[in-house]
Image (cartoon, rainbow, N blue to C red; front, side, top):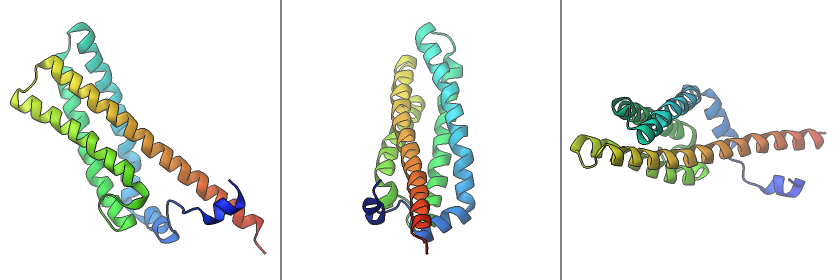
Length: 168
């Protein structure tokens, strides 16, 4: 990134937001829940695909999707608290606006799965296909967050380098 662009680019975090991010326990909570949720997702994905391919393991696949959905709710609730602490609003802070918008779709599809399961709206195959749709949106959303956090790390490193170059 050129010096001009770096000097005029809006960082993901202001100095105060970065300080709040680094000081809050919710950053650690998110850092723990994200990989846990990803692990639960991988196990569940395998179980769902196994059921769809073989017809075996319906109960295990169903339970795994419910567990994945609970993990999603946990990370969404704690993420909202994190966003409030860091940015002053529970959702849709400018820095994570589009990630939050897409998170709503992820949450809607996972919730639709729970509703369809509870009310018998879909058969087992339909439920598993709905779970796959929810999982596809989860992968897109997780990628959004990873790219945003990577960009923030690169931006912070570039800003530190720039400060060191122009330090008196």
